[in-house]
Length: 99
Image (cartoon, rainbow, N blue to C red):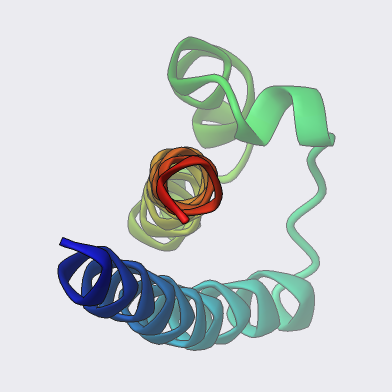
């Protein structure tokens, strides 16, 4: 059981690392394009799907696809990172208690 928990914890950590790198590359690539095209938005706007559609996209209709991609990838990254961090913490706690 102990070995299984250690392996599971290591796999979760590696998946978190991989997902973080993957989404960071995608987010930074989209962000670079937005900066080059001088698209302006606030963090509050970009993290809310409703605000993106109502406030940001109408101002920059030519860059709607990049804005949506950036916003979606950023939200997915935060969501997956949070879930994986909670799982790692949970399994780490179980591992400490089991030992």
